[in-house]
View 1: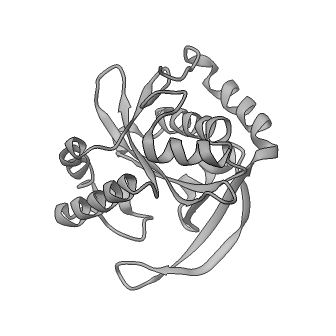
View 2: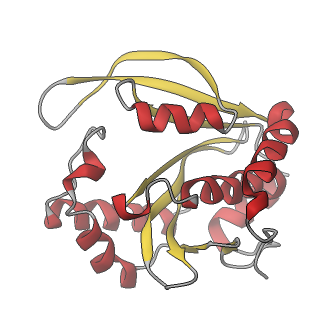
Length: 213
């Protein structure tokens, strides 16, 4: 299992091919060719209202994306752009990070441009990622963190079946010097079958999802 985990993250030799695909979206591995579009999307300040860092500044955002790509190259995280299949438009980005191979757990983080909020894209993205995590990577725990004030994110996590584990006080210092309290949610291996059924029910109005080959 650990060998598979290592291979999937470092070499992309996995049973799903190089990207994950659903009815509305595909998740493609982050590439420098995506940077300009992501930076342009990130100029909308609404995205970062509840984030510890405001990446509306192009140079700051570009530096962040470059760091993520370096981490991908050394196998310490995976990042994807979220592409709307019908239009080919990039809606945002999501990633698997804080990887713990020994104990098969990780964290998911993401952002979407406001044009794609409440579109079902976030739900489908999480479904594809969680299926990948629990059924390909064989993770036993997937974690999510969000600012305690981020009601949109917290409601979305609770609706998809994630469990609130608690609040980490003074979890970090934000760019503006204030302190963030982070709400921590998780889904564990034993809960995946029930959570997956919830996703399937929510996505039943779309054509059946399947992984791309």
